[in-house]
Amino acid sequence: MMARAGAGPLRRLVVLRHAKSAWPVGVPDHERPLAPRGRRDAPAAGRALAEADCLPDLAVCSTAVRARQTWELASAQWGTPPPVQHDGRVYAAEVPELLDVVRGAPDHVRTLLLVGHNPGLEELVLDLAGDALDDVLDDVTTKFPTSAIAFLSWHGRTWASLAPGTALLTDMIVARGKKKA
Image (cartoon, rainbow, N blue to C red; front, side):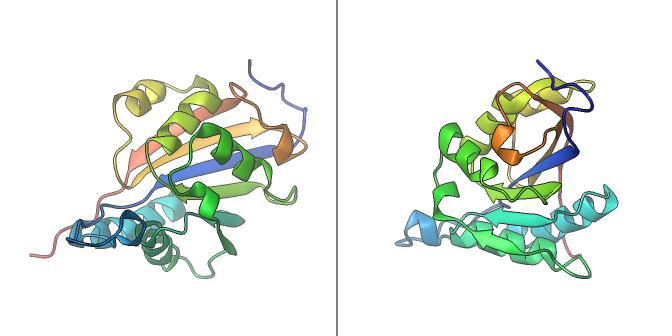
């Protein structure tokens, strides 16, 4: 059930799956860096957020190297990046942990960016979306690839009140950078 208009200010949760990572031999999963394609796609994600007029007031990013590099390259596309919190709970998290992270956002934040990993991010988006515009829900259900960005909106007085099924999934895009010739 969607929250009624007037139940609080409009809030936006933007969910960004890290860009494509490399798989170097002997490197623990948490320490895996971005692959060349990921280094192209992460800045494209930053540009896509700016073009969508959806720059965050705060970012919460996984502590994994590939997520941190995605954040750094994406946010470098903006004049002044917002504050970022690197939160170990986002790495390998399932929906309850991710929801706890989101619910912990300060109430003055209107747009929150969450940078992390699948399958948790995809499941979070599907869990929160009580409704969606067009075929966006089908798009997320079909595939939430690296560099995918989901946009959720809801009305709420506090982040702590965000509940499953209360947000509107307004869009999903997949940011891809151009390969150099």
